[in-house]
Length: 184
Image (cartoon, rainbow, N blue to C red; front, top):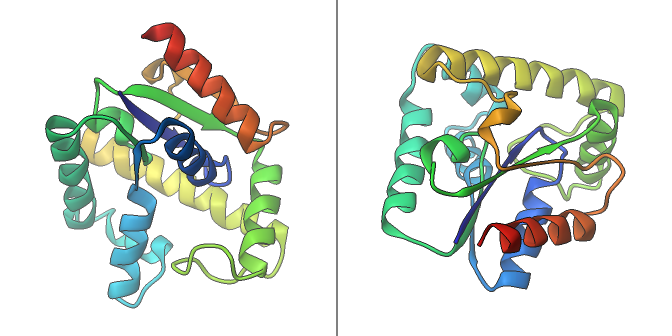
């Protein structure tokens, strides 16, 4: 079983990925962490890496090839990544959505406590965070349209869509496990 989690920043992909891996005893992979590591190695933020990706597909291609190879050679894992559903088409594909204001509040709270990702700046407010996240989503949507001709927002690409705005990670995890069990 492969579960591919996708969705907006702040929707809970990382937290749910980790809970699923723990509950199901599966290995967990994060494409956001992989891209974040690439950004840090270059001394830039994830947003700067994404901006470079508009003209140079190299950083995307490395992550995309990793995902495709993983999906072709391994089984029984959880992966979170914006395009994991595309590069591992036989996975059970889950899209997590969230109200942008709530997403910004979640990320701002985590990052202001320095518990967030190191490839992102320390935000000064939830409003600033929301603005940056809105730009990030739009930029990624444009980049993936340009390179792959696909949309991140099309819910038809997924087996299950969950709005995490008013659900905690345990509830989301339980809903995914129930859906996967029904499909098996």
